[in-house]
Image 1 (spheres, rainbow, N blue to C red):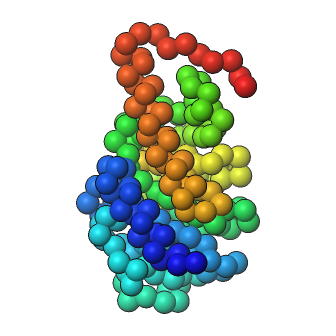
Image 2: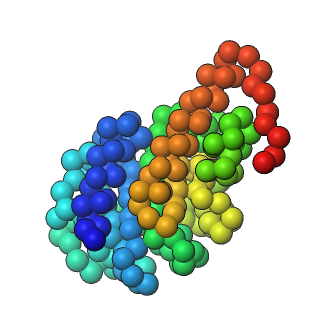
Image 3: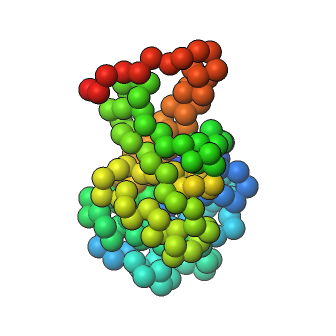
Length: 195
């Protein structure tokens, strides 16, 4: 498999779907127990090339690559250290999801059965500055029990068995948040019973 090509493809999709802007966001794939491919810092996700992708170990040491890895690598390695079944992490700033994160509103999926079954709860991790150890620690309470979480005043992060699945979670999350806001503007949404 060409994991670097997969990361570039997901980066293009995220950029085209406006899940990130400019150089925002980061993507990683675990390739073995202690090695991770991750996007470089200060690089638009829509225009990455395979040679831009960096290989690091779970402590953040660069194994291969000429660029500097994402400053938020700790967000990714925290998930990998806590979940053996997760092999990909996606961090993005979708507009509607970010608005939920800015207002501290968790995404509880209570309006649509597809969202409830696919996404589950996306809680809000407490605020921490991007690229810090505190940011990585803020997601720890949710890593084992959720498929991702919102980052207060920042965006969201999702994790899954592969990079496409992690990306689909982010895409679904933005779609669900947009639909929720629209439904609330129209009237009082119906709450579905727990499935």
